[in-house]
Length: 163
Image: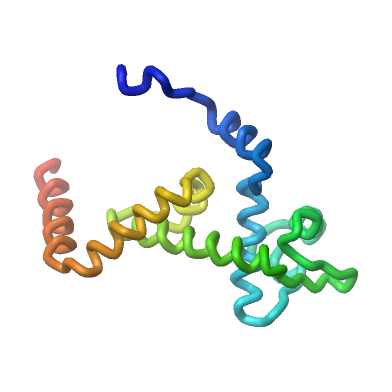
């Protein structure tokens, strides 16, 4: 416990409020921007209806979030519901998608039973430094097949011994 003497503990909501004050995107805004980025990779634009369909929200809710992202300079949005990324939106969207892929890959590596759901729940909490370290770990296992096999064997034996 001594290691945490100088730490400032907060609730999840407390950390979210601190981040909001630092002008960071909320987790919900990140989800919308990440999905807009995914969709804009296919074309140079997307539409509110497609975004709301894939995020399982009402079009009116998606419109509100798109409007917020446009006001923050991440998207261009016109009255015909066409959404395009700004340079800032493209750069941030690319990071958000890469972060998602990294975390989901890590969770698959360790054997998560529902990596997509767990990724969605934790991705907003991790710093870019932590995501970079996870990328390093994934690369290490990709480049060291024997380490990957050793880890897989370790997991299997540990599970077997618990039974």
